[in-house]
Length: 184
Image (tube, rainbow, N blue to C red):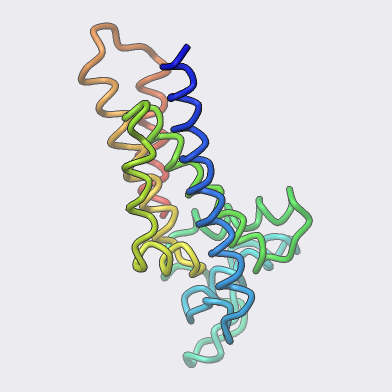
Protein backbone atom coordinates (compact mmCIF):
# COMPACT_ATOMS: atom_id res chain seq x y z
CA UNK A 1 0.00 0.00 0.00
CA UNK A 2 2.82 2.42 0.85
CA UNK A 3 4.57 1.71 -2.48
CA UNK A 4 1.30 2.38 -4.31
CA UNK A 5 0.89 5.74 -2.56
CA UNK A 6 4.53 6.62 -3.21
CA UNK A 7 4.14 5.82 -6.91
CA UNK A 8 0.97 7.94 -7.10
CA UNK A 9 2.84 10.77 -5.41
CA UNK A 10 5.61 10.53 -8.01
CA UNK A 11 3.08 10.52 -10.84
CA UNK A 12 1.41 13.56 -9.32
CA UNK A 13 4.78 15.31 -9.21
CA UNK A 14 5.39 14.40 -12.87
CA UNK A 15 1.95 15.73 -13.83
CA UNK A 16 2.57 18.90 -11.82
CA UNK A 17 5.89 19.46 -13.58
CA UNK A 18 4.20 19.03 -16.95
CA UNK A 19 1.38 21.40 -15.98
CA UNK A 20 3.74 24.13 -14.75
CA UNK A 21 5.88 23.96 -17.88
CA UNK A 22 2.78 23.96 -20.11
CA UNK A 23 1.42 27.01 -18.33
CA UNK A 24 4.81 28.72 -18.69
CA UNK A 25 4.77 28.06 -22.46
CA UNK A 26 1.32 29.60 -22.81
CA UNK A 27 2.08 32.61 -20.62
CA UNK A 28 5.46 33.26 -22.22
CA UNK A 29 3.88 33.10 -25.69
CA UNK A 30 1.01 35.37 -24.72
CA UNK A 31 3.05 38.06 -22.99
CA UNK A 32 6.08 38.08 -25.29
CA UNK A 33 6.05 40.98 -27.77
CA UNK A 34 6.34 38.64 -30.76
CA UNK A 35 4.77 35.49 -29.30
CA UNK A 36 8.02 33.56 -29.69
CA UNK A 37 7.76 33.64 -33.46
CA UNK A 38 11.01 33.74 -35.44
CA UNK A 39 11.27 34.16 -39.24
CA UNK A 40 11.31 30.36 -39.60
CA UNK A 41 8.26 30.14 -37.35
CA UNK A 42 6.44 32.58 -39.60
CA UNK A 43 7.03 30.29 -42.56
CA UNK A 44 5.83 27.24 -40.62
CA UNK A 45 2.63 29.10 -39.71
CA UNK A 46 2.22 30.40 -43.27
CA UNK A 47 2.50 26.90 -44.68
CA UNK A 48 0.02 25.59 -42.12
CA UNK A 49 -2.44 28.32 -43.22
CA UNK A 50 -1.87 27.51 -46.89
CA UNK A 51 -2.47 23.82 -46.22
CA UNK A 52 -5.67 24.59 -44.32
CA UNK A 53 -6.98 26.67 -47.22
CA UNK A 54 -6.15 23.91 -49.71
CA UNK A 55 -3.35 25.80 -51.48
CA UNK A 56 -0.82 23.02 -50.93
CA UNK A 57 2.84 23.23 -50.00
CA UNK A 58 3.29 26.80 -51.23
CA UNK A 59 4.24 30.02 -49.44
CA UNK A 60 4.87 33.64 -50.36
CA UNK A 61 8.45 34.68 -49.61
CA UNK A 62 8.43 38.40 -50.43
CA UNK A 63 10.52 39.29 -47.37
CA UNK A 64 13.49 37.39 -48.78
CA UNK A 65 13.13 38.44 -52.38
CA UNK A 66 11.03 35.44 -53.25
CA UNK A 67 7.96 35.09 -55.38
CA UNK A 68 4.34 34.47 -54.57
CA UNK A 69 3.45 30.82 -54.19
CA UNK A 70 6.93 29.37 -54.04
CA UNK A 71 7.25 25.70 -53.18
CA UNK A 72 8.01 25.18 -49.47
CA UNK A 73 11.36 23.45 -49.96
CA UNK A 74 13.72 25.17 -47.53
CA UNK A 75 12.41 23.40 -44.43
CA UNK A 76 10.97 19.97 -43.70
CA UNK A 77 7.17 19.84 -43.84
CA UNK A 78 6.44 17.63 -40.83
CA UNK A 79 6.10 20.38 -38.24
CA UNK A 80 3.84 22.67 -40.32
CA UNK A 81 1.65 19.70 -41.25
CA UNK A 82 1.26 18.84 -37.56
CA UNK A 83 0.42 22.49 -36.79
CA UNK A 84 -2.27 22.36 -39.46
CA UNK A 85 -3.67 19.11 -38.04
CA UNK A 86 -3.65 20.56 -34.52
CA UNK A 87 -5.47 23.64 -35.80
CA UNK A 88 -8.11 21.54 -37.53
CA UNK A 89 -8.58 19.34 -34.43
CA UNK A 90 -8.74 22.16 -31.90
CA UNK A 91 -10.31 24.94 -33.98
CA UNK A 92 -7.59 27.30 -32.73
CA UNK A 93 -5.55 29.65 -34.90
CA UNK A 94 -2.34 28.22 -36.31
CA UNK A 95 -0.40 30.36 -33.81
CA UNK A 96 -2.08 28.83 -30.76
CA UNK A 97 -2.20 25.42 -32.39
CA UNK A 98 1.59 25.52 -32.65
CA UNK A 99 1.78 26.17 -28.90
CA UNK A 100 -0.69 23.34 -28.19
CA UNK A 101 1.38 21.07 -30.44
CA UNK A 102 4.53 21.97 -28.48
CA UNK A 103 2.74 21.11 -25.23
CA UNK A 104 1.56 17.83 -26.74
CA UNK A 105 5.15 17.02 -27.80
CA UNK A 106 6.34 17.85 -24.29
CA UNK A 107 3.67 15.54 -22.86
CA UNK A 108 4.82 12.83 -25.27
CA UNK A 109 8.36 13.23 -23.91
CA UNK A 110 7.04 12.92 -20.35
CA UNK A 111 5.23 9.70 -21.28
CA UNK A 112 8.44 8.26 -22.72
CA UNK A 113 10.30 9.28 -19.56
CA UNK A 114 7.64 7.48 -17.51
CA UNK A 115 7.94 4.36 -19.65
CA UNK A 116 11.73 4.34 -19.44
CA UNK A 117 12.36 5.37 -15.86
CA UNK A 118 9.14 4.26 -14.15
CA UNK A 119 8.93 5.77 -10.68
CA UNK A 120 12.04 7.96 -11.15
CA UNK A 121 10.67 9.75 -14.23
CA UNK A 122 9.81 12.80 -12.17
CA UNK A 123 13.51 13.35 -11.45
CA UNK A 124 14.39 13.28 -15.15
CA UNK A 125 11.48 15.58 -15.98
CA UNK A 126 13.12 18.38 -13.99
CA UNK A 127 15.55 18.96 -16.87
CA UNK A 128 12.70 20.68 -18.74
CA UNK A 129 12.79 23.51 -16.19
CA UNK A 130 16.14 24.63 -17.65
CA UNK A 131 15.67 27.93 -19.41
CA UNK A 132 16.92 26.59 -22.74
CA UNK A 133 14.17 23.95 -22.84
CA UNK A 134 11.54 26.49 -21.79
CA UNK A 135 12.70 28.77 -24.61
CA UNK A 136 12.77 26.01 -27.21
CA UNK A 137 9.30 24.77 -26.31
CA UNK A 138 7.93 28.34 -26.25
CA UNK A 139 9.10 29.06 -29.79
CA UNK A 140 7.24 27.73 -32.80
CA UNK A 141 10.24 25.74 -33.96
CA UNK A 142 10.61 22.34 -35.56
CA UNK A 143 13.25 21.55 -32.92
CA UNK A 144 10.37 20.54 -30.65
CA UNK A 145 9.27 17.82 -33.06
CA UNK A 146 12.88 16.80 -33.69
CA UNK A 147 13.63 16.47 -29.96
CA UNK A 148 10.49 14.39 -29.35
CA UNK A 149 11.22 12.27 -32.43
CA UNK A 150 14.82 11.70 -31.36
CA UNK A 151 13.80 10.52 -27.90
CA UNK A 152 11.04 8.38 -29.45
CA UNK A 153 13.58 6.85 -31.85
CA UNK A 154 15.96 6.05 -28.98
CA UNK A 155 13.08 4.54 -26.99
CA UNK A 156 11.99 2.34 -29.93
CA UNK A 157 15.56 1.25 -30.65
CA UNK A 158 16.08 0.47 -26.97
CA UNK A 159 12.95 -1.70 -26.94
CA UNK A 160 14.14 -3.67 -29.95
CA UNK A 161 17.63 -4.17 -28.50
CA UNK A 162 16.52 -5.32 -25.03
CA UNK A 163 13.50 -7.32 -26.15
CA UNK A 164 13.95 -11.04 -26.57
CA UNK A 165 10.97 -11.18 -28.90
CA UNK A 166 10.81 -8.41 -31.49
CA UNK A 167 7.40 -7.76 -32.96
CA UNK A 168 5.96 -6.09 -36.02
CA UNK A 169 4.65 -3.27 -33.81
CA UNK A 170 8.13 -2.51 -32.44
CA UNK A 171 9.59 -2.29 -35.94
CA UNK A 172 6.64 -0.21 -37.15
CA UNK A 173 7.17 2.27 -34.30
CA UNK A 174 10.88 2.44 -35.15
CA UNK A 175 9.96 3.17 -38.78
CA UNK A 176 7.49 5.87 -37.64
CA UNK A 177 10.11 7.49 -35.40
CA UNK A 178 12.61 7.48 -38.29
CA UNK A 179 10.06 9.10 -40.62
CA UNK A 180 9.32 11.76 -38.01
CA UNK A 181 13.03 12.53 -37.71
CA UNK A 182 13.28 12.87 -41.48
CA UNK A 183 10.19 15.11 -41.69
CA UNK A 184 11.31 17.40 -38.87
